[in-house]
Image 1: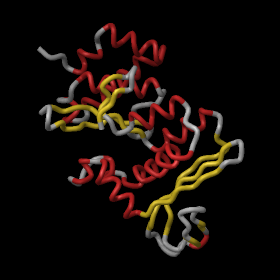
Image 2: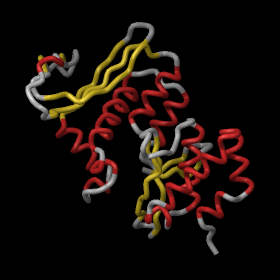
Image 3: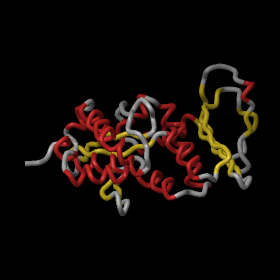
Image 4: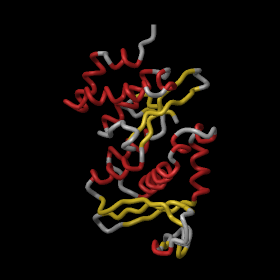
Amino acid sequence: MELTTKDFFNQNSVKKRFEELLGKRSTAFITSVLQIVNSNDLLKNADPASIYNAAATAATLDLPLNNSLGFAYIVPYNDRKANKQLATFQIGYKAYIQLAQRSGQFKTISATPIFKGQIVSENPLFGFEFDFSKKECDEIVGYAAYFKLLNGFEKMLYMTKAELEKHGKQYSQTFKKGYGLWSDNFEAMALKTVIKLLLSKFAPLSVDMQTAVITDQSVIKNTESLEVEY
């Protein structure tokens, strides 16, 4: 008989693992994971081991699993080949900002929607130029992310709304079907995407930031070796 998620997390080995990662906060963290599972019919039927691996990765990165906070999520995924539900680990844009701040190498990092009229010049090689006082209306035409390191190096990335929609549909099966994080909160996912791509391409990545980039939007097979499946 297969273990339920509650029974899986009640195992002494699982409790000990979260105590090692979170100390006194482990009990509250496990409770939050079980609440997330119980509130989602698809996660209720998901493989408990995949839920554990997603939760353990969040704990390793010290990211709260609370949908209202927007740092990290456990999202159900229907594996048609295996004919079962699995849990994927997804990171919010706030988490990338926090992990960058923790590294101690960033002077500033941010992301923002770009409204019609705010683009002054377009130069993919040297960077787009914006004038945020020139907003013509509430139409969002794209999203931009920017960082500056303490050593003075800086970089910016801009993507149009159409480019982000294409990206979302390429990497999210649920977005293609009209539901999931991309559909429910497009702006948050768009901000996350420009930050993630900017950091992964141009920033010095701490161990935690490397883990975040590797595990984001994946089914985690092994938390130690970071064996994942996208």
